[in-house]
Length: 171
Ligand code: OFO
Image (cartoon, rainbow, N blue to C red; front, side, top):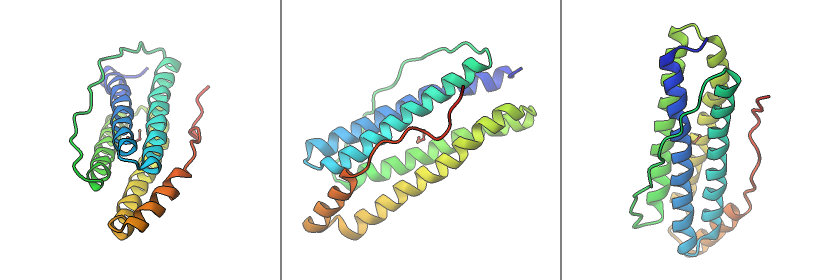
């Protein structure tokens, strides 16, 4: 039996993952509007992954007999005045999501809710990878993004990213 406080946090996490998808779609649109289709592609795939995460939380809750309560998804209201701003915003956001997942884990640990802890293990690893991916992208932008040829090549590299479904599958 999953405790009420954990139920509430799991349900809220669905909204946070969907907001992540919105944020990354917003960033994707910004880059596409500015002719950087590779950056746009990278963030569009990121948005798809976030929707996958939301679906995993939904599936986990349903598998445990918990009713889902969907709430309104906020619209991202960011102003992007330079190409590096969305990258830094993405890193700040990923760190926020990591702390949110860790918080659920803390409560699951206190409640000896081993099932939820095991479910969250995948997300803890995933967040580590996502933070690293954005950090690497920021570093690449710092190294190459300020020169037009470097920016072109980096954009081409990001255009090659392809979507892959999550490695976590819930029956
Ligand atoms: Fe859902 O992993 Fe990023 O936020």
